[in-house]
Image: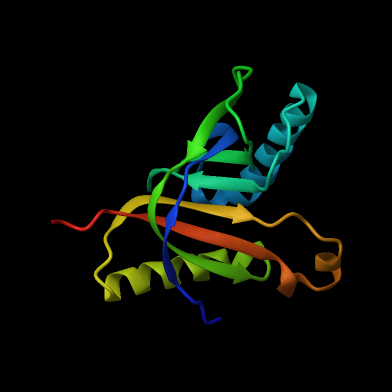
Length: 155
């Protein structure tokens, strides 16, 4: 798949998340379970206007925050925490298709950054589109936006 990589500025977004350290092989189970847990919390807490689901990868050791966008700070419950997606310069691309192919988008962004002198911070995230029933029949329409936080250029 060809990816169109874009450099842009990302504004911080509040999130409701479950934090954990997860092995790469476990992500396909952990991410949907954590999204469901957070969504249940958001509804029970009456948080207004919940947004899309997301997964924030904080390092290569498996530290991850998974949940949903929220639009104001809130008090967590010991398991679900208030956090933020980071602000800053990012390299981003949209992935269309099943989640199993997301590694291709990540690899494309990393290659593009290496070839264009963009230094990565080690922090990246995915924002998943709101599920549309048509995606059940045509998974090629599933949209996931992938972001890599970049180091600021040296002056």
